[in-house]
Image 1: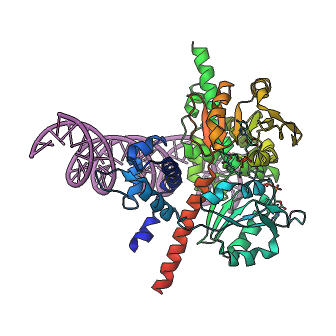
Image 2 (image 1 turned 30 degrees about the vertical axis):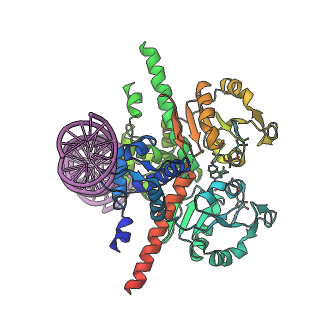
Length: 223
Length: 223
DNA sequence: GTAAAGCTGTGAAAACCGTAACAGAATACT
DNA sequence: AGTATTCTGTTACGGTTTTCACAGCTTTAC
Ligand SMILES: NC(=O)c1ccc[n+]([C@@H]2O[C@H](COP(=O)([O-])OP(=O)(O)OC[C@H]3O[C@@H](n4cnc5c(N)ncnc54)[C@H](O)[C@@H]3O)[C@@H](O)[C@H]2O)c1
Ligand SMILES: NC(=O)c1ccc[n+]([C@@H]2O[C@H](COP(=O)([O-])OP(=O)(O)OC[C@H]3O[C@@H](n4cnc5c(N)ncnc54)[C@H](O)[C@@H]3O)[C@@H](O)[C@H]2O)c1
């Protein structure tokens, strides 16, 4: 099974496209589409068909030359690769504004990440129900992570607390941290962090908006 | 000023780093640091100093050989480049769970994106105050966008409504859409879209977690 | 049955991005 | 003053990602 190890040596860019493929395929599946060609799938996602085939090639290919892809086979194959063939129990740390929004985000469940623990330190929040689950005191963190076999944590605490909490999560056995706080977390090897920075997103958008406005101004002065 | 047009031909990867530079610089500024070398700044962000200089080089450089960067000059220069030298009035469309979290996210203001309009169609939400602003009916959308000179919209409506609402936003003069709905928006040229897909983020994290778990298992069986 | 069209898997080419190296300039030190 | 050090701007290099091109298989049309 050297394939498994090899399957982890995949460009980040490819990894980020896998969820997009899966999402689109599930959509097709829902409307009864059985077969789909690399061209059809790629065009609906605004990428080149060759890139899609190349991406799939990292995992050995999902069809045979001449045959289009079968949606019913591709969906579970991608789920397997992404690691959500089985539901992945997840925790939310910090039940503030963002944490509450995420706790109420039904798509998390659908996508394979059932929330099995919501934690906070604020006594006013502890016990409050969110989507059928009580907010728990941080005292229970280690116990719940162990019992529910939680491997992924969504971190929505203030930036100042992020590193401290992250350390505790790692200590408790968390392997993946989805971090929404604007802080550069340091974690030991064997733990994956994904930073979701709102500021980066809106600022790169702003950059492009500025470029558009500038080119519009130039067009006017040129006429 | 051919520089302006040229300054828009910058790799995406560089654009995404600019906000990180700015954030760190503001932090340094806050604690009274006046000068900073490319090495110092880069190391604190876990990137190579040469890359930072390379990034800055797209914009002509911010210092002279031999001199470190002056924080007080760099901050406004980056703000200019990103397009937030002046505050950028922003609207939130969809005041549900996520829209409310964002409306209450003070960092948006701080980073230069004051929210000047929150919109929804749900009568129960219209009029409710969020951070000193009432949720407005969508009827007022065009008027408020015009009066407040809003150029960027944060889209937090259900996926099914996203394209329809996006069309209306473009029609009303919006140039940048920060889209949180899992939908591939089609917009005309001259409009920038940035998709923020939670599913992509958590699934790529899941992929890495799966790889970590697999390599741990292999380590055990090898011993 | 045969030709044509459509499809994937695959490796090579091109484009892109990150890294290293260095020249020239400013500063610090002796 | 002179030398060593530190620093940026800039270019050249190397690696990675994307794109292209095509061989070979499969179905469709006639
Ligand atoms: N609100 C947004 O829309 C938004 C968007 C992007 C990023 N963020 C980031 O997400 C984080 C949370 O934002 P928010 O708006 O929800 O803030 P918030 O203040 O509403 O929520 C933070 C929650 O974390 C809890 N908390 C504090 N310390 C804790 C600890 N040690 N352990 C467990 N819980 C703790 C607090 O009690 C609070 O309920 C911040 O870092 C923020 O920068 C927020
Ligand atoms: N909740 C989350 O944490 C989260 C995370 C990532 C992405 N998203 C996405 O963000 C979007 C919103 O999620 P949510 O959880 O806030 O859902 P929500 O149902 O709580 O909120 C959606 C809001 O949009 C309003 N709306 C519906 N149609 C509208 C229209 N035509 N014009 C204006 N407003 C309209 C609704 O009245 C509602 O208040 C969804 O597409 C969701 O997939 C949500």
